[in-house]
Length: 207
Image 1: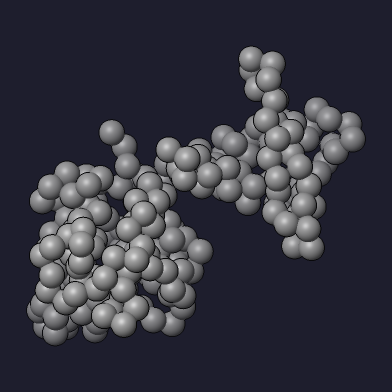
Image 2: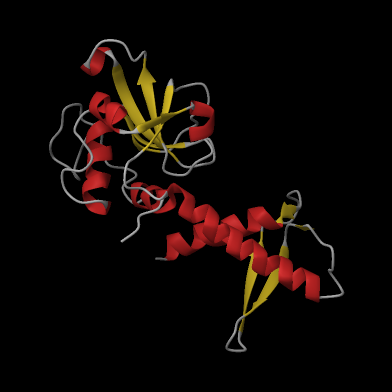
């Protein structure tokens, strides 16, 4: 079974609200930052694949820039200077939700949830065994469908953005249709690519 970055984020979001306890081995009732990551890995990839400890997880992943990681759902984020070993090197880890926010077990005060990632992290990474490109490939296909709808409808031919608050009617091969609300009234127009990504996000939220 292929696991995508967005699936990893969706699973992480299911556990928001779990208390943070440093050094806890009592998942899913409590955990610290790296135990949370290990728990997610055990559920989606299988037991023992994601190593224990933020430092070991940092060494295990493929390192990328923080800026890139902030744009990739399911990429990992790390705080530390990368020198030495263990907590002297890397002392915190989180997941990027792809929108410059996190899914993380942050601290005793904050627990598990989502916060801004901007300006907080020193390293980004990609987990092994996660298909980070699959979501974008799916979004490519959804965007292609949207463009075909636009191209064959003379009322909207050439359209590249849709006004927020609009309702988009999608025809299906069986002759049925589905109607989707696009953003909220008053928000800026939304590109077809952004709409495609939202469809993919909603699919994983529903499955």
